[in-house]
Image (cartoon, rainbow, N blue to C red; front, top):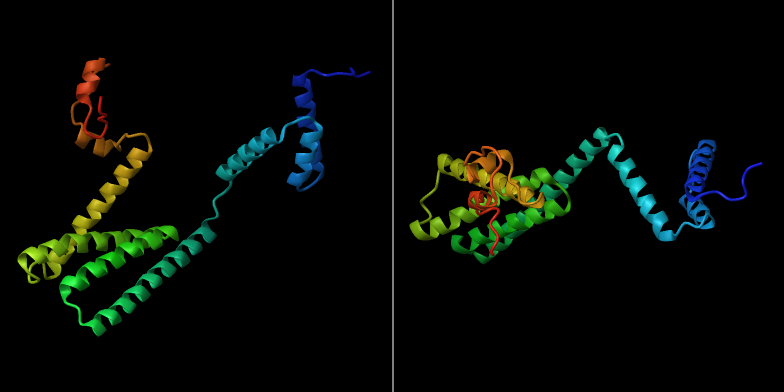
Amino acid sequence: MPPHSLSSDAARRVLARAAELDAQAAADVPVARLRDAAREAGISDAAFEAALHDVETREAEHAPPRRGRDVVGAVVVNVLAFALFWVTLALWARVEHSLQLAWEADHPARALLNVLGVFIALRLRARAVAVVLAVTAAAQVAQYPLHLLFGIEVLQGAAAKWGLMLAALLGVVFGVLMTRAVARGGRAPAVLGALLDPAPRRGAATGAEKGRGRTWLHWRPT
């Protein structure tokens, strides 16, 4: 005959096996039913919720990517974000035309609209539009003080415009890489790390050498 009591280890194995057999018999097991079963087995609600969150997180990580739906959804979101930006820009063009604003007022307003478009695109997760608007916003912000200092005639023409856009694109890419580096614990990507701290590392460094080898990216006040 089976024993009247089981060790905690054996009890967990029995419950796990019973749940596995029950799950095989049914296509889906309601979470409420699992929660009730866990309570009857003496498992706290906090432990059950933590286990449920852990399992759902792992299943989401290993779930096959839905490429078709993801691509269509990304296209729709980016088109929507771009359309919202152009509607906003068209409304401002009407306001600017009715008020007969000078370029000194119109230029920063359009740059602010680009920045607003970046925030809207990020909220909608329209990354492609966010990058494009971030580049144009950076170019406009860089161009405005130069126009104020040297006149509206400077930085005109296709070559100057494309040069500004390229510089803005590089700035946006650099900013994204640095932001990700900080989010990962302050370590820059390999290329940026070589630029910021070009000194070669040979063997294990002492504490003093490590301190001297740190760049401004890793510096902390003492």
